[in-house]
Length: 126
Image (tube, rainbow, N blue to C red; front, side, top):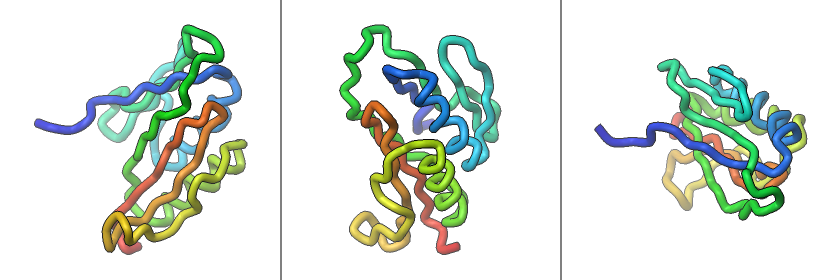
């Protein structure tokens, strides 16, 4: 079996980043699996797929993480983007086709307060 088991990113201001990631993950159908010093989101299988946590060395974040999350439709890509922007994320690419990636690639990109880029992507035409 191949693929990614889970992804963890670390942020300097956990509370601020949490206000962005909770709505954008919910827009894609993820639920909070558990929350301690981190917030872990689970996908449809109920596994801990995506986690945000506080950096153990304050103000030492690179901001070079890029995470691409599958979306089932272009509508969900739009919901992801709107939820993130409304919550305070920075636009890094509005929802739309990306034919330079592939003819059916449709995605949106946001940056969190630490400069990490999260993308929602679908290859669905609807």
